[in-house]
Length: 228
Length: 228
DNA sequence: GAAGATCACGATGTCAACATCCAGACAGTT
DNA sequence: AACTGTCTGGATGTTGACATCGTGATCTTC
Image (cartoon, rainbow over all chains, first blue to last red; front, side):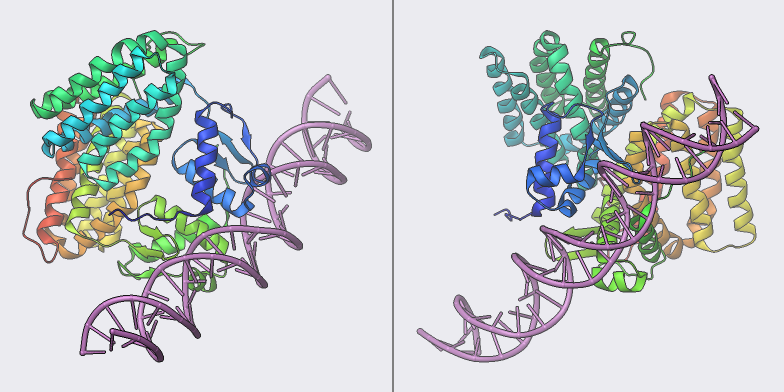
């Protein structure tokens, strides 16, 4: 059995705040005041402080000395940065996962994509689809079985979540029309193909998300060149 | 001018503890008790606690709920994990850096390698050489100019430092005989060559370090297969 | 004698008060 | 009018005391 470990109030507080940010209830750029949060979450400032440090580790907020912590903004530079690093991580993750792939794991991935397909038919909301998308990639990192890689992914995951949430709002149709096919292709490459084409496919999968997001982000020329 | 920012006691405490770990004064696996550290560093437990959280972010220590924090151990699995992720990051970093390379930056890198060469002649100690090695790679991440990439690197850097420190002790000669040449080759590829051969060279540079470390690590069969 | 329950100790988790610092408003000077 | 210095409100940084938990030793029971 897996150890049901307690995590403490700091993690709980981080979860609540993260949720609020990802749901859009706390807009980008807004300040997260420790006393306010402590009051509304009914924990002490110390725990809130520790929770905010966790979110900073995830890149969701940014703290400055004696100036407080704010939710990150969503600029095109940030998109390019995040997705460039994500591409590098996914490339490694899929490569490692391919070596440890089993029929069971393949089936699990297909189940997730099936759920996506069903969510499309039922016309489910953005968050549901996005959760499945992220779960799919989480499973890949799990089977890659490299704890440092997973940690690095955690440091990017929430930001990706935030960006993709924006995409499901602004670019709804295009996202819904490509998710299933792209992920099915990834599975095919994962369980069958050569390493280098898989690596290439993983990078392309991420970069297509980057381009789609850039096209739809307000106040910027569409699909500008170099990532990073 | 660059902002001269204050950082607070937590960062100061983290620096002192990190230094102690990397110098080997605190052996792997040993417990870091908050009250002890608070007493010896002459700060409160809260600051020590926050400092330890910083070190956990860097992967140097590991904390468990109500069980305290300990210095990480140094197993072959850990080496494989760290260097696999590092290879992926360096691959991206060098690729991005190549696009932004200027003669000035190239000269800077050469200056660092010159310093390595001189350190070899003077028969300087391991830490000096290692510091130059890390500074070299830091400069690459700087010119890559991707803050998320730099953050990911920070989450690995201290562990790499720890591992490489072990290597300079256990594998002194081989390390000293290859550092200069390998880094000069990297510079050549950075300022001249094609993107894919550069990426390949960066990965190979990291993987050669991994293999060397594995060969020399006690209690294990030399250079076993798959990384990660 | 071995397995399980009990307990004490030492450590971490949490809290609320105190010290410090930043940003903006305001007034004084050139 | 622009610049500089002061002040103040409100936030964060820091601290020590209290609450809670884990570990190992001891005791009990079969």
